[in-house]
Length: 176
Image (cartoon, rainbow, N blue to C red; front, side):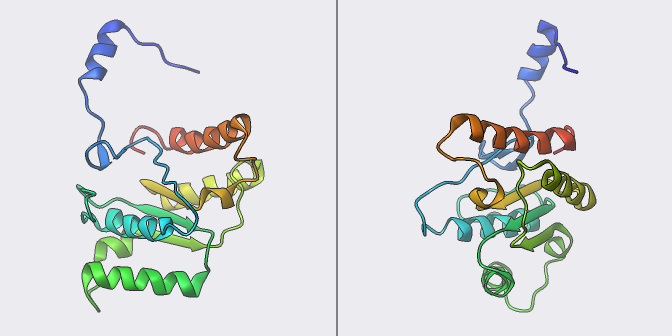
């Protein structure tokens, strides 16, 4: 089913700024943020740092994070050991050695090398089940190419992948 609005509803909605996970319009709630760049441009390092910052509610670089949010990070590069080493160093840089941030402990869930294709019905259901279990505010798939088997040069196939991503958002409701 779909919703319809009166013009008065539209005018009221237009005056309500969306809540933001990362301020200044970088990541409003109920949206998709795509980080892209050349191979080996350290996109995963940026993503890991953003995941830590969002979960802790701490601003990072020029990204203003107003409050802690629950994050589910699915990383399909590296593996447990190498990624845990990276995340440990990033954590220590942000919080100091031995200082456990309770927000991070409660807000950051990570899986390394998950074998999921979001454009596969069975795999999408597994991810939806995990989302329901963890109830994240932010879902990070790093890198996106490892979570689908679509041709990235096909607008039609990538439209289907992004349709799956929008389904994750829609299933979470207005607070997602």
